[in-house]
Image (cartoon, rainbow, N blue to C red):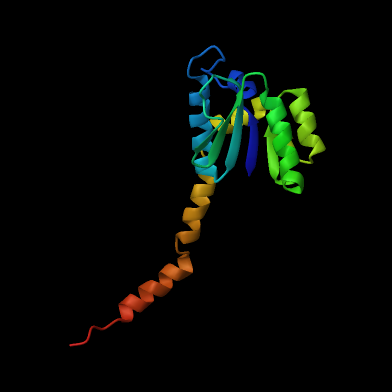
Length: 159
């Protein structure tokens, strides 16, 4: 899944983060980065009001942080990205609670997810059930165990 995230819109929905923190963007990016790594996702996270000298784009593994310079807003940058993606926008999920951003996502036929819903996903522990299912696929069933026991019991080493 590829996410287009309205970063400052998501921050207030993460317990322990708020927009007044000096490192709110950095902490959010670390959370999203971990989420992308464990789920095989990609994300573009957009922040507005970038300070002067801030690089406009910062690749961080499976995500790219976009810092929109002052005088512009992240909402517009997300809308432009959706237009650039064209039909590929259908493969994206737009994360925001801003009505304008969500409308742009719907207009581009992207999935739209509210920030509070994505925050719950972001903070959820990794799914243990899928790990257990993968291990079960590797474990031999009872018939296979019986077959191996028979083979080893019949084995006679050469002299």
